[in-house]
Image 1: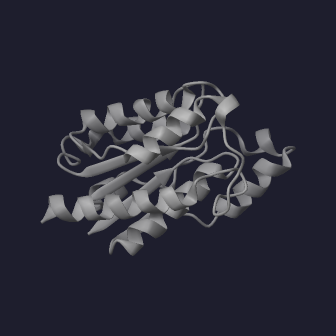
Image 2 (image 1 turned 180 degrees about the vertical axis):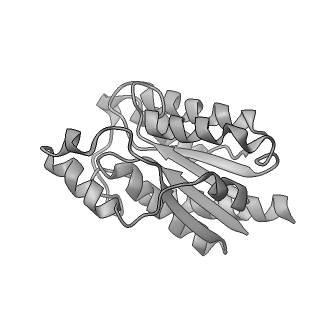
Length: 194
């Protein structure tokens, strides 16, 4: 079974989650394609911000996502930072360009993920914005586990955001849960394919 993990990341947090999901999918027995979507902004726009430049350099070796990656996959994970309660324009453009799939995603299992946001409700809204185009293509959405939903609810309230715990990335990302999401996606894709 094949899993495509497709993401956009500006500062590197969503990329860390994507890598953990890809690792979990491999642990679940899947062949994995980790892909980033193309940047829309001119490359010199971010040249003065060290953190963004470092993330760009780190992600340069990750291949760009193509429409064929969606067709190849039995399971799809889409990730984005929460941009004002929506997915990033870059991921939105990729999905708009993929609209010609005309039923090729029907019956495939998909999940979405998002890096934390300090704005109340932004993360949940961004996840919903990624689910809508997948549903339009006929994908079957794998809901987050209850623990992940509770985590999203607490992440939507900055005052209740817990301090970083062991096993979490430098940005406070929950990498163990991301790996678990990848394993579940691989197992779900295997069940629907078989």
